[in-house]
Image (tube, rainbow, N blue to C red; front, side, top):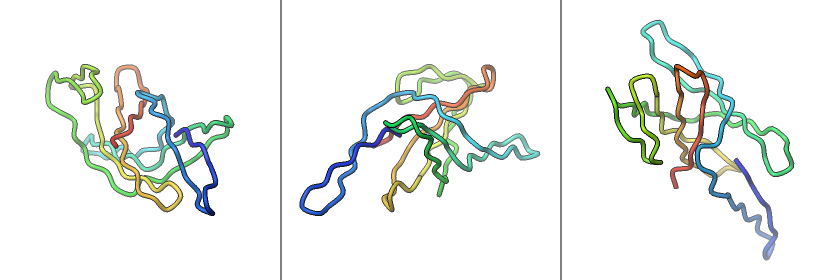
Length: 112
């Protein structure tokens, strides 16, 4: 997550740049029933340092068969999509994680 800090009247203001489909590192759990549970994400900030965020809640919103994801990327049965909650400086943020099982990589998109 790209973060920029500014001080205004003693308040810390966090601005997020709108990066779509950013590749991220994810620690996840694979259950014996074949489900995937995302646990943590690791992304680089503006300074190039890694930041780690624990996933506070998630929902598997993967579709069955072919579909189009909210960010316009076509999805298939080998693409998993999760809506997740993370805490950034005590503020809850919503993100979407996409896992491509064929290429074995994760991408992240901001929800709002």
